[in-house]
Image 1 (cartoon, rainbow, N blue to C red):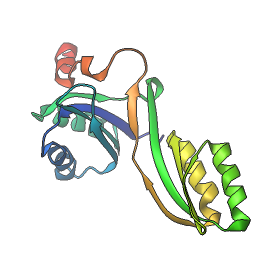
Image 2: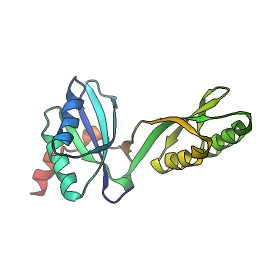
Image 3: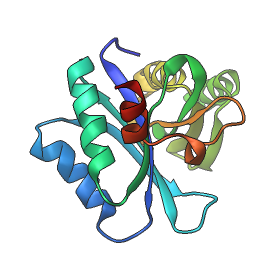
Image 4: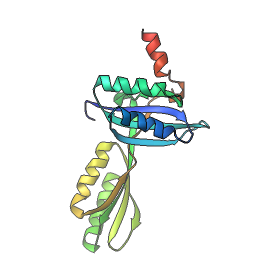
Length: 178
């Protein structure tokens, strides 16, 4: 992870327009979203959004404060790299013929990837893991001829028993510090 990269996780109302408001906040302030992952949670009516972005401490602080002000955002938290499990899913389609297929199957085994589609001229593989593992897999497969690839973006969950829904909101933490 880069020094200026950060990951934010938030619980939001699972309603139309919420993602637009969250991404619009980034756009209005000129901040880029590097990856974005959204999905429903175990709690009815809430979705979890995980965003990866870059910026110094001031930018990070501003983004979190602004997100906390959005009505649909229930909890927003900066995910610490040393105390979170972070994963990404990658699907990659590679050219394959009889000569290269066995080495691709061997690479899949070494990287613990799954073959999800096998055709006479291509192999589609699925890999899940830390970003560095996914990057290494892509680089290994590049000489074979990558036809297409897609990634989910990073998703993160804190280590231990305490769930995000039990975290203090950013505004509550700020008022305790002051």
